[in-house]
Amino acid sequence: MTASTPLFNLTGRTALITGSCQGIGLGIAEVLAQMGARIILNGLITDEEARPALNKIRKIGAEVIYHQADVTDESSVENMFSKNESKFGSIDIMINNAGICYPHTIEEISLQEWQEMLNVNITANFLCARAAFKRMKARKWGRIIQISSVTAHQGALFGHVHYAASKGAQLSFSKTLARTAAPYNITVNSICPGIILTDLLQRTYPAEKIKELADSVPLGLGNPYDVGAAAGYLCSESGRYVTGATIDINGGMNIR
Image (cartoon, rainbow, N blue to C red):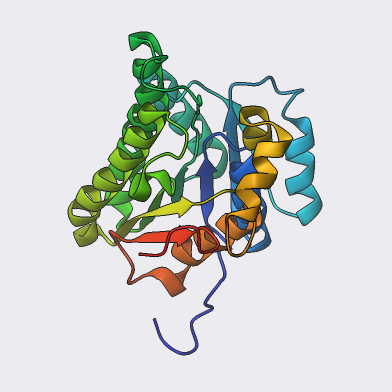
């Protein structure tokens, strides 16, 4: 990179963001679209249900498609990559954002729920990162980002040990893959959001608990675009020398 390199320009790049029809995933998609990237949205909802998210990206002026796929299923992931490559060509940016969260204590968590949490929050990341890596490796360029959580550092505030465990696993996964990927000009990083005002947060906690959480954070609640801005930096040429790192977007909730 030189002083004349466009620092925050993703024109010509294609980004696949899992779990991206709402919340943090959609916020990331909007920011990357504003930077010029082509966007592949993903989720389990129907094409019709994804239309509002698609329209948001189209209003920005970016090319965008939606692919319904279960990212915990190996064949579904491979099919998603193959089909979207035929549409947009190479997938340059892989954002592993899909996730679930249940606010249950260890005594309330069944083995089935534990396994579901790990399957969605870490196994899906492995499947998507593996599919992306083997393609990026051949082109010697790529960006892989895990959307983890502040709970990976400090533990969950209200139980849900399975969620915190899965988010901690994402950080170790990223650090190790970063070493493997670096010789091929592929960076692998993690973003740890704090309390971001999303539909998921509002479904997980009652309004009075959300206010209590907001009051406990020095800068208050964040929004999905705060996370998107960090992702945009890591995906751009400005972030070319950052790999194996974790960026905290938590408003001062956890200062390391």
